[in-house]
Amino acid sequence: MQAALDPNPAHQRWVVRYRGFVLIPQNDLTWLVRPERSPMSLLPFRTPASSVDDVKALIDWRLNQAA
Image (cartoon, rainbow, N blue to C red; front, side, top):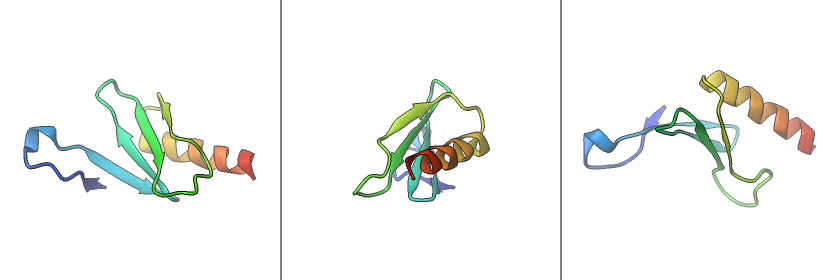
């Protein structure tokens, strides 16, 4: 995991990079999933998955569906 750059420690968020995507936890307990760069194989999306492993599994599933 890596902290987003923000001078105020109260506003720091952790992000996870996985298979070309950035997983960003949100305040409402969802995850925002964005591609790291273009061209995008999947559009950005939100997921209510509760753990980072659930989000990774969802990314794997979506990438297999797109192939």
